[in-house]
Image 1 (spheres, rainbow, N blue to C red):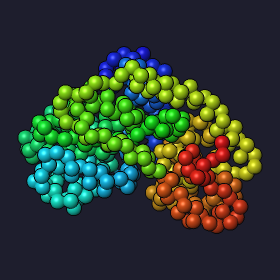
Image 2: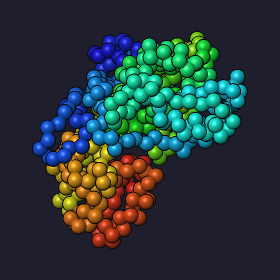
Image 3: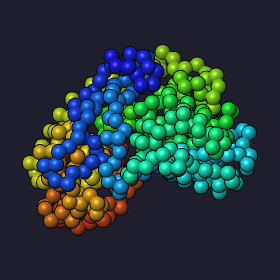
Image 4: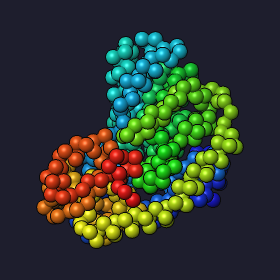
Length: 397
């Protein structure tokens, strides 16, 4: 049993071990380039039910080596969220809102549009001393400690509402990060936390959800329990389903939390995680058999040279069954995928190289656009399918 990164109990078991894996933001300049790898294993804590990585990679290894790498998070629900936040008891037009990262900028803008004038956001260099180029959430979660939060509170004053979207799941010291948020907020202030909801992905055994950058894989029950363990009372909670990725938003404040996770909830979390772990070997065999059959019929490629394609190729060992990965990002074209070392070519190569099946790993909301943009490939007899099981273009595996 491993020590839980959240509750600190020696209760993390049932590990699904993927072995040494590359950092998926490190594209290769040549197929023979040396590559850093780190052990990747995920398990579930039998004491608090939280699915998590066993040994996260060091933050400096996760830092992108290219300044053009960036990530987007779902925003379709933010107007709704801003409307809900403005109704929180005790807030006035003079209330101070503080965002933690650039992912909070769009929420802060919406709040200003709703009459809240006092908004600010932490600046990486000025407030956290982040000087390294290409840094992101992996570095922010490391630098925002209780000590730096106390200095920020003394320098800028404390905020009535602290916003933090898509950082908590990256936290390698989650209790320290949550305490830092309490320090940035006023004693009775609100902390608004948004994380990916992995409940559906775990239940459907979507192994692409495991990523070396995400330490935690929250569900509604485990996020609420996480906040309770850190001394927060959850005063508002909501899930936002989306084709771009389900989201969970919690509004919490320091105080006596209600009852923590009960035995039935804990059992449900552990059983879901156990199912996710047990099904991996079967899923890997199914995918290998499917792609081997497709390869006998013609060439196979992927579209979208991101971490989701890399996960499927590396976890399921599909390197020998796939020709290349297509992507029109000028920075990625001509490079090679982490792990599989497959070449990254422009989408014109789908038709030029006679690909029969192309598997899309792009966000479901842009699949229609991708299909329109690749009409010549389709007209030539090619097929586009999605790696996402909920897509209407999903692979028939």
